Image 1 (cartoon, rainbow, N blue to C red):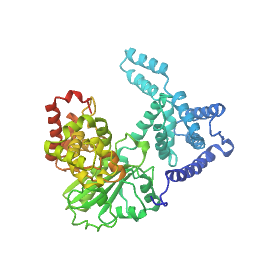
Image 2 (spheres, helix red, strand yellow):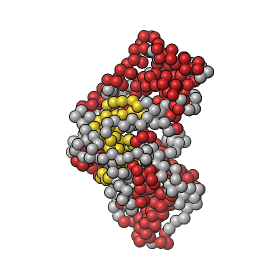
Image 3 (cartoon, one colour):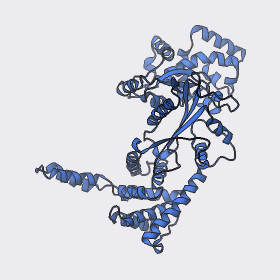
Image 4 (cartoon, rainbow, N blue to C red):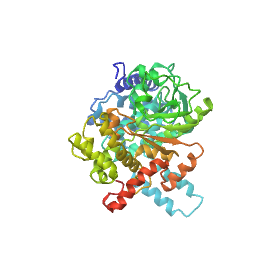
Amino acid sequence: MSDQKPKRAVIFGRTLKRLRYAWSEVSRNVLGGDQIINFDPELPDEDMNRLRDLVDRCLEAPAGEESARALAARIGQSYMSLNEAGRERFLTLLATDFDVNEEDIELAISAYTQCEDPELLPKYRRTLRTQLDAPRIRLLTQFNALPEGVKFLVDLREELLSLDTRKEPKLANLTFDLKMLLSSWFDIGFLRLEQITWDSPASLLEKLIEYEAVHQIASWDDLKNRLDSDRRLFAFFHPNMPGEPLIFVQVALVNGLAGNIQDLLDQTAPSTDAHEANTAIFYSISNAQRGLDGISLGNYLIKQVVASLKRELPHLKKFATLSPIPGFTAWLDDQLDLMALTAFNNKEQKAFEEVAKELELEPELRTFLSVPDWHTQPKMVEVLEPPLKRLCAYYLNLKREGRSTAMNAVAHFHLSNGAVIQRLNWLGDTSEKGIGRSTGMMVNYLYDLDSINQRSEAYSHSGEIAMSNAVKTSAEKIIKEIERMGSASAIPPGA
């Protein structure tokens, strides 16, 4: 990576500086500068008590009043002044001391269930609903009206997700409260889709470099190549988080299905004329805000990007991905001793053994895959391709234990959106990461616009995994071999 790449801490530091200044102005204008409270970064017990009092004051202030928002700003300033240990103590305080009151809930339930007057039922129902909302939710909601307050809450949830809830189980409840708030604020109706180009603000471009999670952006030249005339990059933005991409997708305009990510990202390769391309390849989808994990945005992003591309380039015929298969290598390593028995036909087994003898290796799949540079040795590559592609097809057909959803998370995402597992690409990603997580294989998920809704419903309702005939045939060869060997019962559910 170029030394020009910004570190996440630098971006976060800039946001923190802006927040501190903006929020200090809010609290100073309403509460006066003489009321600023300085906390020890570790948040010892004495400071914890003072912070608890500050939260109480905020909750007692009338909702919507300037004083409530100013107190929330002061609380936020206090949080940002703490170190990691102090912030965890602050979050634990919110999770435990400002949770729901179980006794009040029981009383509200009793009053509602015992009410015999139908006209009073709505009143008791409203009371019950109020008791079910933890007091801290009122505090969290105040941040929505503060400058960059929504971004603050997104980052707050990111920190919560990194904590060990086994130490304090109620932290999970606080995380859930934040998820519910953010889910309502990040409804698709509030988001806007924007195309990002090389002319976009530099501050936004450097965030793309930092947030890219699938294929690392190696330099500014690499980013410029990904924004060339035959490329498109789209992102979702929220009106209360200007300049902060929520999730973004990178698209290559090509002819036919792309099967190799190194070729697709080659900066020396000639550009394709976008108006002659017939296929849009989605080769990277990155969530830029970990605090929004679990809040579905990607499915809406793909559909809106397809609509945008169709308007701009109506001649495009196919929309597909070139996707990684994270988890395949880990699954294979766990199951290899059993699955290797099903992977070869007789002719392939003989060729495999001959190569093993020539290279003085044990004729075992595990031995071959343990050779660090196996993917650069033509003879090894030739004998490994057929069995590994079959095993990968079988893996993509597996479902989570006790559920009807695909085991592989990326497959689940695209299948739930109505895609088809169209083609496996042998050595489609020969980077260290690609070899390490999927033996270098990649997959094309095809979005057939005429059938995506039907396929999405079939997957959601019955767990039907849509595969092309070629991929299905590969998977079925493993399934039939397992059945022939009578070893299906030996494979753990979901293995």
